[in-house]
Image 1: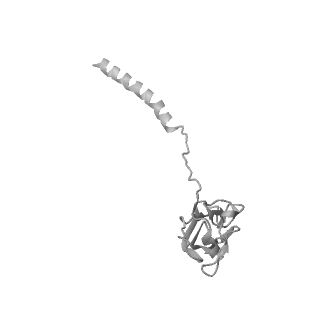
Image 2: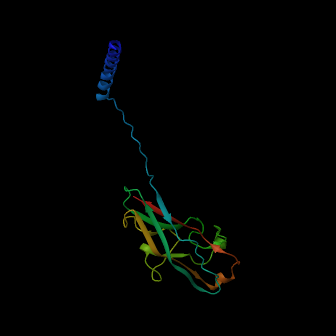
Image 3: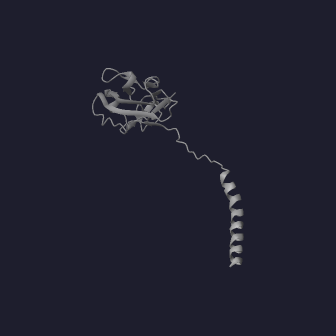
Length: 180
C-alpha cells in the first residue's frame, strides 16, 4: 500500500509540475488580429423618360408630350450637387426629327424639336430648341439627387412637312447627369 501511495504521490507531483508551466503560459497569451472589411461602391444613376411618341402628324400644328420624369442620384457622400442636361448628338441635323433618325439635312422636318421643364421653365410657356445642349437642372440645385417631373417635348409641323417622305421621323435625346 505504501508503494501505491508513493506511486500516486509521484504521479500527482508530475501532474503538478506539468500543470504549472501550462498555467504560466495561459496567464501570458500571445494574440493577433485580422481586420475584415468590405466597401460599398459609389453609384451614379440617371433615369430618363421612356420613349416619347408624338403620334401621327396628320395636320399642321404643335404635337407635344408633357409631364415626363427624369431623375438622377448617387450614394457618394462627397457629391453634394448634381445637374441634368439634354442634347441631340447628331452633327448636321442637331435637334431635328429626321426620317429614320438619319443625320441628313434632306431628311429633316422644318422645325427643330423643342424641350421644356426644369430650369428651362414649364410648358406651354417655355420651350427651348434642342439645336444646342439644354440645361434642365443647374448643378448647384440639389444634394445628391435631382428630379424633374415636368419634362416636355414639342414639335411644330408645317404644311410642307406633310408632303415629305412617309415614315418615322425621330432623334435620340442624350441625358447627362453631372455630379460634383
